[in-house]
Length: 332
Image (cartoon, rainbow, N blue to C red; front, side):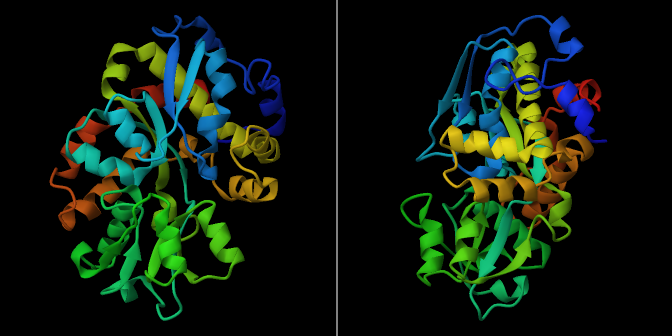
C-alpha cells in the first residue's frame, strides 16, 4: 500500500534541515548506531537517486560522518565486498559473481524494477536474433554482462553463443555500440535517453515494461557482511534512510529531481524527472526480493555462469531481517 499525499506530508520535514521524512516512533526508541560513520559508493547513474537523497536522512538516523566513495574503476558491489565501502545500491546482475565466490557481500533489499533497455541495430528484431552477434558490456563479469546473459538464457541462448566486447573503461560500451562495433547494448539510465535522442538503434526489451523482467528488481541494496554482523542497529538505520530515499523519489519526483540537480548528480532537470517518474520506487514495499534473486540465479546456473546452486547462494548471500522489520514499521 502506498502513502497518501496527506500522510506523506505529515511524515515529512524540510530536507536539508533534518530529513525529508521524519523518524518513526520505533526508530526514536532504538539505541543509537554502533558507529557514527558510514561509507557509501558513489554513482552518477540517475536511477540510483535514493542513495544520494538519503544523505540528510542518514544524519537524522544518527550518522555524523557520511562518506561517498567514487568508483570510477570499480563497481559498488566490489568495493563493498573488499571492505572499502559499507553499503551500495547497484544493479542486481553485479551481485551474482561475488555471491558465487562467497565474497563478503549481503543483499539486503530490493529498490525498484526497470531502468534498462536492450538496444540493437536495425538488422535485429528480437532477443533470439542476438545469437552470433556482438554485445557491448562495461566489463566481462560486470552487472550488464551478467544481466544480458540471463536474458539470453531465458530464450535458450548460451553466453558463448555471442561475442562480448568491452573497452578499457567502464563507460566505453555505449561508444562501441554507437560506432557500430557492437550489435547490442543494455543501456542504463540516462544512457538510453541519449540513444533515443540521437535515434541510434531501437529497443527490443524494456525491463520497466516487459515481462518477466518488469516483475523483478533491477537495483538492490547490499552491505558488507562484517559491517552488518557487527553493527545491526546501524545497518537497520542505514537501510531505513535508503528506503525512505526511494519513497522521496516515488512520492515527490519533482523535488527529488531538483535536489539531484542542485547537488550536481544530474545536470538536466527534465531528464532526471522523466527517469524518476518512470521507475516504480515504491516496489520495495510490495515485492519479495528473494524472488528476484532466485529468478536470475536459476538462469545463470543453467548456463554455467555461476556454480553455486541458487538455494545455497540465496541462503548465504542475502539477509532480509532488516527489510521485513522496516516493511512493518514503515507501512503506510
